[in-house]
Amino acid sequence: KQEVTQIPAALSVPEGENLVLNCSFTDSAIYNLQWFRQDPGKGLTSLLLIQSSQREQTSGRLNASLDKSSGRSTLYIAASQPGDSATYLCAVGNDRLAFGKGNQVVVIP
Amino acid sequence: EAQVTQNPRYLITVTGKKLTVTCSQNMNHEYMSWYRQDPGLGLRQIYYSMNVEVTDKGDVPEGYKVSRKEKRNFPLILESPSPNQTSLYFCASSLNGGLTYEQYFGPGTRLTVT
Image 1 (tube, chains in turn purple, cyan):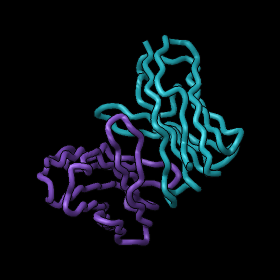
Image 2 (spheres, rainbow over the protein chains, first blue to last red; image 1 turned 90 degrees about the vertical axis):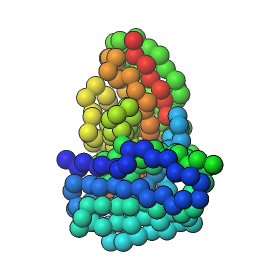
Image 3 (cartoon, chains in turn brown, purple; image 1 turned 120 degrees about the horizontal axis):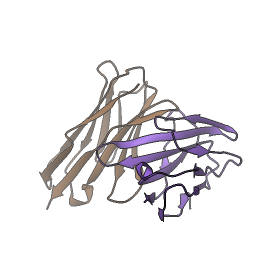
Image 4 (cartoon, rainbow over the protein chains, first blue to last red; image 1 turned 135 degrees about the horizontal axis):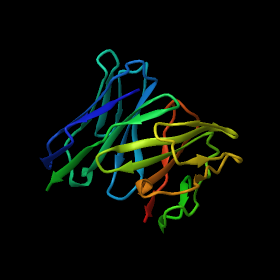
C-alpha cells in the first residue's frame, strides 16, 4: 500500500521567504504526482501536476520537482505572500490515489 | 463554469438512517472519486469510477456504496450510517484516471452522525 508523508506538518515563515515543502512516498513505481492547495473548510485546488517521466514542473512562483528513485517530491514557493497561507497536499497513484496529510503553512506579514 | 457540485453541504443525521450525498460534474469527465477527510488521518479515497458502470474500491470503502449510471453523477450512499462516518466528504473528477489530468474537487459535505 502506498504511504505518503509530508514534512514538516506545519510551518510559519515571514513574508518574502521562500517555502520548501516535502512529500515522500513508499512505492516509487508511481504514475504521476499532483500538488494541491486547501484553504480552511474548502475543497482542494490543483497547483501542479508532474508526469512520472518529468523531473519538474513550474507555474509562476511555484516549482515542483520529482525524484522517483528516492521517492520524493518538493514544492518550492518563491517569495511567499500572506495569501499563500493554506495547507498543501501531495497525491500520488494511478487510478487509486494516496494523499499526504499536508503541510500547513502560515505566512506572517 | 466548470465545476463539481455536492449536495447537501451540511448534514446532521442519526445512526442507521440511510442517506445519499450527490456529486455532479459538468466537464464530461470520465474519472470520479469520493474521499473523506478526518483530522490526523488526512484525505482517504473511498471509491472511484473510471467511467459509467465502472467503480472500484479505494482505501476505506466499508460502510459506503456508490453507483455510476450517468457520466456526470456519482452519488455516495450510506445505507446505515454510524458515528464513525462523521467526516468531511469530497467528490472529485478528472478527464480520466491515473492522475494524468488535473483533479477538480467539490466544495465538500460535512456529515455528522449522532
